[in-house]
Amino acid sequence: MSSARRLLVAGPAAALPLTGCGGGDASDRTAAAASSAAAASSAQAADVPDLASGLLPADAFGPDATVLALPPEQLRAGTGIVAGGPDVEITPESCRAAVDGTQPALDAFEDVAAQSATAGSTTTVQVLVRGGPVRDAAAQLAEAAERCPEARLVAPQIGEATITFEQLPVADLGDGSALLRYTTTIAAPGGSRVTVPTLVAAVEDGDRLLLLLTLDTGLGGAAPADPAAFAELVEQAYQVQADALG
Image (cartoon, rainbow, N blue to C red; front, side, top):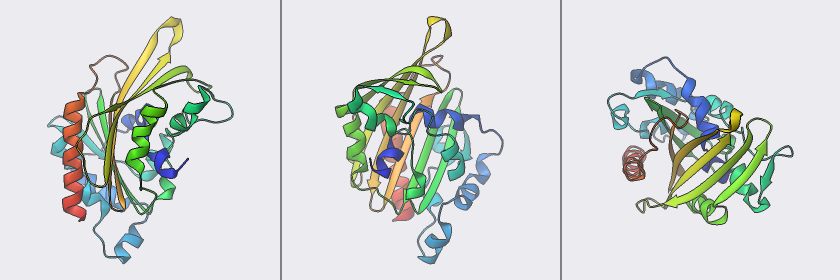
C-alpha cells in the first residue's frame, strides 16, 4: 500500500491521542508549526513559502477553539494503534489495506505542518504535507469506502472493533478531493459499545496534500460533526493554502 494511503485514513486511532496535548495558545501556533517541519532547511534552500503559512487561521475553527501546533513527532506518536499487523485479525481480509491506512507514514514527505483545534469534545486536525507520494491520494481515500464499507478487527490494544467507511460529497478542489466518514465502534466492558465518528478529507494540490479530520472525543456524548459544515471548512482550508503557497 502507498505511503499516501497510510497518511490519508488517519482516523480516530490517530487523532484521539492528539487531543490530550494542552498548554500553549494560538498566538505561537504558526511559529511552532514552522519549526516542526520535517525538512524546513530544504524548503528554505528552494526558496519556497513555509508550509505552515498555508494552515488555517485560528479563528476559522470558531471563537472557543484552542489551536495548537502539532510537530510531526507528535503525529507519529498518536498513530498506528489499529494498524494491521500479524497480531491483528481483520475480516474480510480484503479490508486489510483500508485498516492499515490508519497508520500514516510521515517520513515519506519532505515537509510537514500540522495543527489541532479543540472546542468542547470536538477536535479538528489539519495536516499539510509536501514533496511526497500525493498523486491519486484523494482517489485512494474514496476507494476505501467502495472496497471496504465495513470491517471487523480484533487487536490486542483495543479488543474487538468495527470500522465503517462512507464516502460523502465535497466540492471538486485542486487536483482531486474526497471526503469520508470513518466510524469506529469498540466493544467496551460490560457489553456496552463506544462509537467514535470521524470525518476525514483529502485534497491534492500540485506537490502538496491537505488532510483535514474532525471527531468527537466525548466517546458518544455529543452529536457527530455536520458533514456539510465540515465540507465548507475543507474548501476554506484548500483556498488558504492555495493563496499562501501558490
